[in-house]
Amino acid sequence: MIYRLRKKFIKICMLSFVTVFFVLFAAIYLITYRQTNASLDALADIISENDGSFPDLESLDSESSQPERPQWIDQESPFTTRFFTVRFDASGELASTDIRSIASVTGEEAAGYAREALEKGRERGWIGDFRYKVYETEKGTAVVFVSGKDAAANTRRFFFAATAVFMAGSLVVLLLVILISKRAVRPAAESYEKQKQFITNANHELKTPLTLIRTNLDILESEAGASEWLDDIRDETRLMTDLVDRLVTLARMDEESDKLEMRSFDLSDACSETILAFSSSISGRGNTLTVQIPPGVPYTGNEASIRQLVSILMDNAVKYCDPGGTICAVLQAGKHPVLTIDNTYSAVRHLELSHLFDRFYRSDRARTSGNGFGVGLSIAKAITEKHHSEISVQNVRNHIIRFQVRF
Image (cartoon, rainbow, N blue to C red; front, side, top):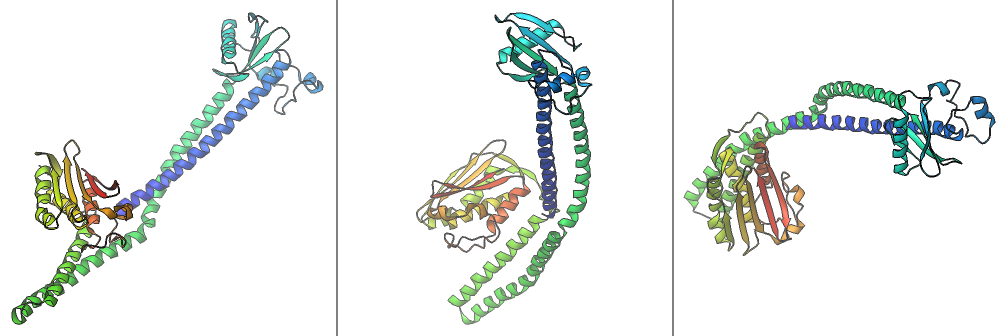
């Protein structure tokens, strides 16, 4: 249990770290993407306003019709900006291509890029490594393309570096969390060990007086005769002994070192024999039992524990079945067999199903009958966990409670 708690602590810490990193990663990517688009769009605006050419800075700063020059555009910008322009006439035919400011694109490629941009029907966008702008001239339509290859390469280098930092940081954080987790769960581990020690001590301390009480009851009954008071004492003693045994069982189930001996056995026989053992009790209460178990379903596990699991579920179904109601047990064969036990229970809608497997949980509004301690279903859940299986509970049509085990 402490191992699982520590493992969960490590998972939560690492998940938090990864989540924060990816949020920052996504935010940086979005900001970088928008800034790149804004920079290339500013260049495209300047070039389109100058009829497909890059103007000199003096004319750019003096002419009020030109867009305002960003501060990062300087004397080197005309030489470092790679762009080309494609013009079409009024009929949509190719008029000219200007590829003087780029060496990696031919005239035919430039024309193909331009037609693709026009087909998209948007003023701005991306085609390959180029950011384009479609604008109108006196003679027709023109498309200017500004290379974003350098910006994309810088962005890729940045994110490769960020990824490397993330991987290294993850290893460091993982090591730190592993070291810290031991100290973080130490209070819970100490409390849990004290709890187990208390249960063990209580078992030893209670078993002896309970045995003496039962022995003295037998002697007293033989001398004074049977009476309802003696019967009540014997019943309560038996219940107390059962509670101690179940607490010890739970404590052992929680121990990581307590490994069950797993063997292959006939699950059908184990389930049917355990279920049919409750048939007389069920008929005595005026209820009906239906069993659907195919023969020869194999399973590898601890047979005694599986029988105890089925016994707990059947005992729960008998205790909390409506008078004159029905109990149905079904085993489905397959690679992962499924055991389903239903019983009619009109008060199921009042149950907090998510707490039924909690230790000592009892619903005051609905679960008022029976002599249970609220630990049986906890033991059932512990058994399924030991077998790497799943147990669940459902409210079916507001009058049936269903327990299902997926082996």
